[in-house]
Image 1 (cartoon, rainbow, N blue to C red):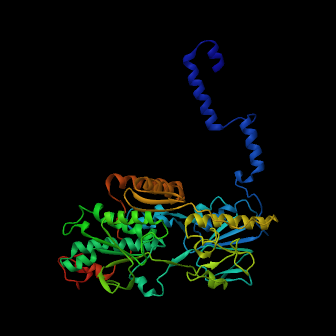
Image 2: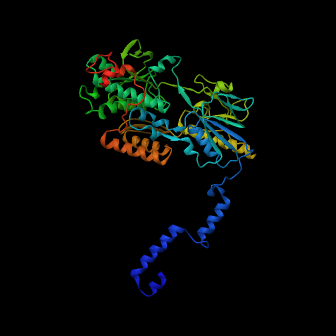
Image 3: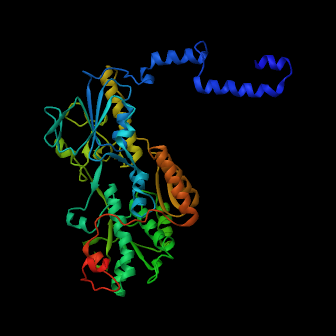
Length: 494
């Protein structure tokens, strides 16, 4: 019709018919004789998963059990998508956590949903993966079974990717006074303590108590400690300046304690100095060469001197999960399980350890660092090893870690980035840090949400998640301007 109208020069109606033609194509797709339809049919025969059908039957296939749905575990599971194996992914949480941004949840910059993604949603389209929620209590390597309480999960290949937990260096009693950051629950608890301290400072008339409430101590000056210190200082100086009437939030003290001689010891000395200068510009007190001797609910003792503080946060070190104890393998002082060049556990058949759980010297003879890119590289490598063994192919070459660099942010327009010989600091490093973290976030929704929150905070110096949730100790409820410290909660409500 359009050709006929064009030949008769009736141009006014031609465009309407073209629109109608495109509408038909959009609604019904190409015809059976079109090249598109022929290609689609061929692709559906080659790839049954396009019709929601499994590529292969799972019955009787080798069983791969992955313990831990962190960066390494998820990468390994995803890389086994087209391998004829049954994959069981076990985690004690039902979500995958993007730990590098967990400190922003703790400092009320992001909400928990921005840095966590449900595991089942991530594995929904991978038909050979099943997800189990549970805490692994041990491994029976003789019978090749993973123990979840009384439940036993058989395996042919086992991948341990259980990560690490806080290390208090033999002083586990400090944990109740100085929480760390490893889980969503930890971040919510830290956020509750931070915001409650400001609320209590508003309620009290005791200058000494207020000073204690407004003193925040971070133990450990690695990337987590530095980022926490900078975020707390910015929250106090820029995020709350008009929110309180009885005190100035900018008067809060943020103290960063480091046993070593400098902050960010894994970075170059020049970037370490840049980071310290940026922290001090924010008002953070940096104490290097200082060792914490005691922590209680009144503060800390550092080098024999007591510092009164009601909020102490731990970022001084981590210890690996109990995988070495489960398997009876050799471990280093940090509890990391020593593995071979193919990341397998010596003496055990088809058992691998990756991420913070493993001690591998695949970084030019040096231990592989506990970073997300390292865990992802290890997860992808172990999947190749399993695929080669299942398919009867030749052995995969030894694992080699490719270092992609180190990053840390100190505050607004301030960060340090180290990529081999390339070392950046300041605004350019800050933008690069943000882009890289957005890229590694899981899920489009999380990326968009974090981008919007950061953009809003950049324009307004405000964050939208300053909520106090969780259990509040009785002491924090009993502090009031008009009521004595021992007043009952019901009096405060009245």
